Length: 259
Image (cartoon, rainbow, N blue to C red; front, side, top):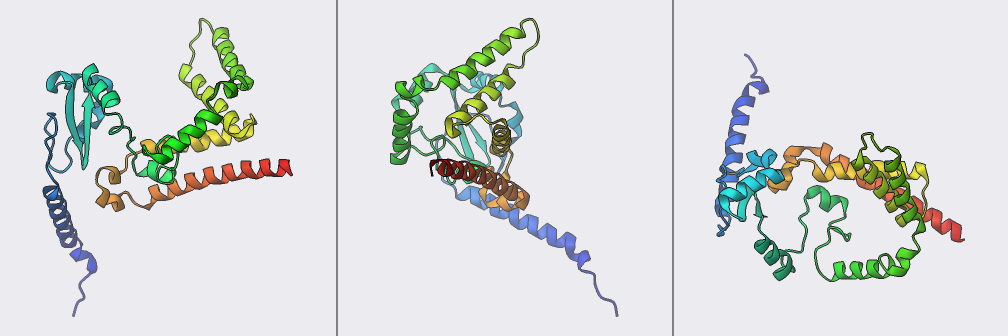
């Protein structure tokens, strides 16, 4: 008498799993309400125009606009993207109907790392965003406040001197601007310019930036988020916790100084 190995059933199990998954995805797409989208390149079933992702640079979008007009449609999985390339349509979206299109899209990483858009950059337009904007205008962007930021102007002047000294030599403007932005942000947010703190802060923000732009299947097919695995989720949790610990430490130090 012989016992069958569980491995011999693996191919058939995987086959039925993939068939079931395909049927589920197809029916999910069929149940979606079809809307009259603008013209655009015809996509493949299920994935839409995802194979064109590496072509969607500003040059690529300009070429598509020549074929489909100043308003065309792309589909990336379940996401629908509208590309605008004429002044008339841009004015319609950004001025005439600005309240309708004022929200910024947020992928899974952005939503998680910002505590479901609990910040000014990604918060949906509404009472919360207006309140945050009001506070920023009064406390951060006022003329009186700007005049008090002598250290910020010093950092700008320092960068200009650096560029001037390297006249005739290649200069990495992107790197200089990034360093300037980080220094100004750090000083404005935490009131200090400690190099050690800045370096740690920059590393955290760089990780945030990588996660914001990382490919995640859940952004295009929310029901298939489990395929990406737990490593991405662990990475997001680690990054968010690192920023929380960093900010909590700064706050505790300020509280101690005032005692």
